[in-house]
Image (tube, rainbow, N blue to C red):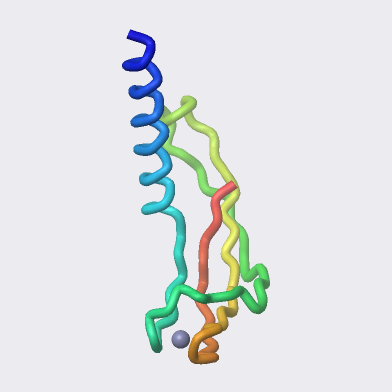
Length: 89
Ligand SMILES: [Zn+2]
């Protein structure tokens, strides 16, 4: 019984870990496809207040959305590019 509970917890943790690993943002170099990418610069472009429609999660409300201009650099082929990313607080 105990070993089954431990096994169940381990399986759940692995599923959470794999889901997190697959959904987290992983920038890739558009030139060579390498994942050895570093963020060279990150500057805020604009921010806006995003309002949930009433009856949504938490019964309405809203959150701040920040748009950043991020400069990436590839450590493999030294290609540099910029991308706009949105972060929700
Ligand atoms: Zn590259």
